[in-house]
Amino acid sequence: MSANAVAATLDLDPIDEQGRPVVRFLRGPHLLGQTPFMAGKTLVEHAIEAGVEIPTNCTSGTCGACMVTLLLGDVPLPEPLPPGLDDFLAEEGARLGCIGLPTGDVDIDIRPPL
Ligand code: FES
Image (cartoon, rainbow, N blue to C red; front, side, top):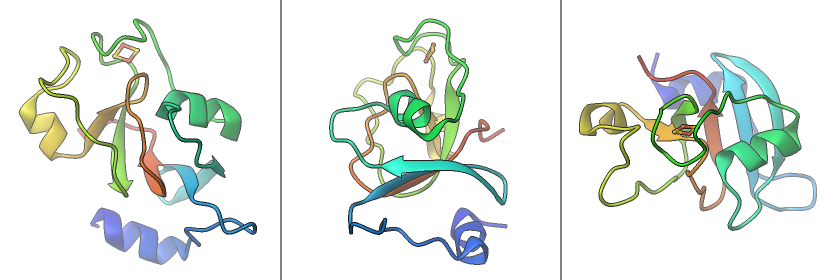
Protein backbone atom coordinates (compact mmCIF):
# COMPACT_ATOMS: atom_id res chain seq x y z
CA MET A 1 0.00 0.00 0.00
CA SER A 2 1.40 3.40 -0.94
CA ALA A 3 1.98 6.15 1.59
CA ASN A 4 -0.89 8.16 0.15
CA ALA A 5 -3.17 5.16 0.40
CA VAL A 6 -2.16 4.64 4.03
CA ALA A 7 -2.93 8.28 4.85
CA ALA A 8 -6.23 8.08 3.00
CA THR A 9 -7.31 5.02 4.97
CA LEU A 10 -6.44 6.80 8.20
CA ASP A 11 -8.70 9.75 7.28
CA LEU A 12 -6.30 12.15 9.00
CA ASP A 13 -7.00 15.84 9.17
CA PRO A 14 -3.83 17.77 8.22
CA ILE A 15 -4.81 20.78 10.30
CA ASP A 16 -5.25 20.89 14.07
CA GLU A 17 -8.24 22.50 15.75
CA GLN A 18 -6.50 25.91 15.72
CA GLY A 19 -5.81 25.65 11.99
CA ARG A 20 -2.07 25.04 12.38
CA PRO A 21 -0.06 22.48 10.40
CA VAL A 22 0.47 19.18 12.20
CA VAL A 23 3.35 16.71 12.38
CA ARG A 24 2.04 13.17 12.81
CA PHE A 25 3.91 10.02 13.76
CA LEU A 26 2.65 6.60 12.75
CA ARG A 27 3.72 2.99 12.85
CA GLY A 28 2.04 1.53 9.79
CA PRO A 29 -1.67 2.41 10.06
CA HIS A 30 -1.46 3.28 13.77
CA LEU A 31 -1.25 6.92 14.80
CA LEU A 32 1.22 7.14 17.69
CA GLY A 33 1.02 10.87 18.31
CA GLN A 34 0.93 14.29 16.74
CA THR A 35 2.00 17.81 17.54
CA PRO A 36 1.62 21.22 15.92
CA PHE A 37 4.37 22.04 13.41
CA MET A 38 7.20 24.07 14.95
CA ALA A 39 9.41 25.88 12.42
CA GLY A 40 13.10 25.14 12.89
CA LYS A 41 12.53 22.05 15.04
CA THR A 42 13.68 18.61 13.92
CA LEU A 43 11.52 15.55 13.53
CA VAL A 44 12.97 14.16 16.78
CA GLU A 45 12.05 17.37 18.61
CA HIS A 46 8.53 17.15 17.18
CA ALA A 47 8.35 13.49 18.23
CA ILE A 48 9.30 14.37 21.80
CA GLU A 49 6.52 16.96 21.85
CA ALA A 50 4.13 14.31 20.53
CA GLY A 51 5.19 11.78 23.17
CA VAL A 52 6.71 9.49 20.53
CA GLU A 53 10.17 7.97 20.84
CA ILE A 54 12.51 7.95 17.87
CA PRO A 55 15.81 6.24 18.73
CA THR A 56 18.88 8.45 18.42
CA ASN A 57 22.60 7.99 18.80
CA CYS A 58 24.88 10.51 17.11
CA THR A 59 22.24 13.27 16.66
CA SER A 60 24.33 14.60 13.75
CA GLY A 61 23.13 12.65 10.70
CA THR A 62 25.94 10.12 10.77
CA CYS A 63 24.71 6.83 12.24
CA GLY A 64 21.20 6.36 10.81
CA ALA A 65 19.71 5.29 14.16
CA CYS A 66 16.93 7.87 13.84
CA MET A 67 15.91 6.89 10.29
CA VAL A 68 12.18 7.24 9.64
CA THR A 69 9.99 7.22 6.54
CA LEU A 70 8.38 10.32 5.12
CA LEU A 71 4.83 9.40 4.07
CA LEU A 72 3.39 12.80 3.23
CA GLY A 73 4.64 16.37 3.23
CA ASP A 74 8.14 17.74 2.84
CA VAL A 75 11.32 17.21 4.83
CA PRO A 76 14.04 18.56 2.52
CA LEU A 77 17.21 16.52 2.12
CA PRO A 78 20.54 18.16 2.92
CA GLU A 79 23.10 18.53 0.12
CA PRO A 80 25.25 16.55 0.11
CA LEU A 81 23.44 13.68 1.81
CA PRO A 82 24.76 13.00 5.31
CA PRO A 83 26.61 9.72 6.02
CA GLY A 84 23.45 8.22 7.56
CA LEU A 85 21.56 8.32 4.23
CA ASP A 86 22.21 7.26 0.66
CA ASP A 87 20.42 8.04 -2.59
CA PHE A 88 18.46 4.77 -2.61
CA LEU A 89 17.16 5.21 0.94
CA ALA A 90 16.30 8.85 0.27
CA GLU A 91 14.33 7.80 -2.83
CA GLU A 92 12.41 5.34 -0.64
CA GLY A 93 11.40 8.20 1.68
CA ALA A 94 14.06 7.82 4.35
CA ARG A 95 14.76 10.86 6.45
CA LEU A 96 16.93 11.31 9.52
CA GLY A 97 14.91 12.47 12.48
CA CYS A 98 17.82 14.14 14.24
CA ILE A 99 18.51 16.57 11.41
CA GLY A 100 15.29 16.46 9.35
CA LEU A 101 13.40 19.76 9.39
CA PRO A 102 9.77 19.49 8.27
CA THR A 103 8.34 22.44 6.37
CA GLY A 104 4.73 22.06 7.49
CA ASP A 105 2.24 19.20 7.62
CA VAL A 106 4.04 15.87 7.49
CA ASP A 107 3.18 12.27 8.19
CA ILE A 108 6.09 10.17 9.40
CA ASP A 109 6.27 6.42 9.83
CA ILE A 110 8.78 5.99 12.65
CA ARG A 111 10.15 2.87 10.93
CA PRO A 112 12.86 3.05 8.26
CA PRO A 113 11.66 2.39 4.70
CA LEU A 114 13.39 -1.01 4.34
S1 FES B 1 20.91 9.91 15.53
FE1 FES B 1 22.52 9.34 14.18
S2 FES B 1 21.80 9.94 12.23
FE2 FES B 1 20.29 10.68 13.63
